[in-house]
Image: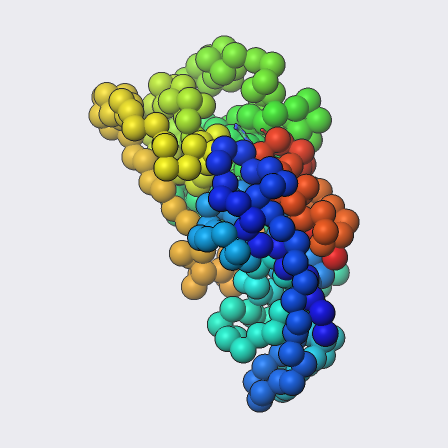
Length: 325
Ligand SMILES: NC(=O)c1ccc[n+]([C@@H]2O[C@H](COP(=O)([O-])OP(=O)(O)OC[C@H]3O[C@@H](n4cnc5c(N)ncnc54)[C@H](OP(=O)(O)O)[C@@H]3O)[C@@H](O)[C@H]2O)c1
C-alpha cells in the first residue's frame, strides 16, 4: 500500500510558508503482526501547536486525526471502525504502538469530526481552562482572544453558560457576528477597534477572568484592565509563535501583576486527559441541547493540509480548522 505524509522541508522562520513542507509517498507494509492495525485518515486536525511541535527537517508534522481501520490483526479494533490517533500528517498509518490511538468516543448522531474540535482537544481545553484554571463564577467579566476559533469560541460559550459577561475579540466582522450569535455579550474586531477603547466600553468594571489565546501586546493591554485578584489562563500565544526562540524578554508586566495580585496560569488541555471522559459527557450533552454551538472550516484533500495550516496564522478559519481526506 502507498501512503502520503507531510514532512518538514525547512525549519520555520516567522510565519509558516509552503517552502517549510514537502509531501512524500511512503510504502506501508501490509504484513501485520498480532495487535497491529493500518489506519486511513478521514479527518485531520489543523492546530497552531503544529508550528512548534516538530523537531527536525525530514520529520513528519505532528497532529491528531480521526481515522478508519482498513487492515487489522487486533480483535479490539475491527476493520471499518473509527479511532482517534496521534499519527501526524499521514494519510495511512501502520500502528504498532496502541498508546497512540484510542477508539472514537460515542457522539451519537453528531458529526464524528467534532471529536477533533468542539468535542475534542480544543473543546476540552476550553472546558478545563474555564473551570479549573479560571474557576469562573456567575456575574464575572470574562475576556477571550481568538474568540471565534476552535478553543476560544467554546471557552466563551462555556463562560456564558456559567453566567459570566463574555467579551470576545476576533479578526473579522463575520467572526464577530458568529460569536454574538453564540451569545457573547460583546464581540470586537481587533483589526478595526482600539483595544483600549473596546475594553473601556465593554468592561468599565474591570475583568475577572482572561482566557488568553493570543499573548503578546494584546495580553499586555488586557492585563491593565484586570481587576484585583483577577485570573488569567494562558492557553496560547499565537501572536508570538512566529518569533520562535526570539520571544520578547520583557520588561514583563510584573508591576501590573503585583499591584493587582493577579494569578497567571499556563496550562495544557492534554494534561487533563484523565478527566476527559466525564467532561466530554457534559460537553456532548450541551452540544446536543444546542447550548454549545460550533463551526468548522473544512478543507478538502490531504494535499491541501499546508494551505489549511497556513490559514490559521492568517485567520482564515472560522471555528475549528479540519482537513477532510
Ligand atoms: N494550552 C492548550 O492545551 C491549547 C490547546 C488548544 C489550543 N491552544 C492555543 O489556543 C490558541 C487558539 O488555538 P485554536 O486551535 O483554537 O486555533 P483557532 O483559534 O481556531 O485558530 C487560530 C486563530 O488565531 C487567530 N490569530 C492568528 N494569528 C493571530 C495574531 N497574530 N494575533 C491575534 N490573533 C491571531 C486567528 O483568528 P482571528 O481572525 O480572530 O485573528 C486564527 O483564526 C492558540 O494559541 C493555540 O496554540 C492551546
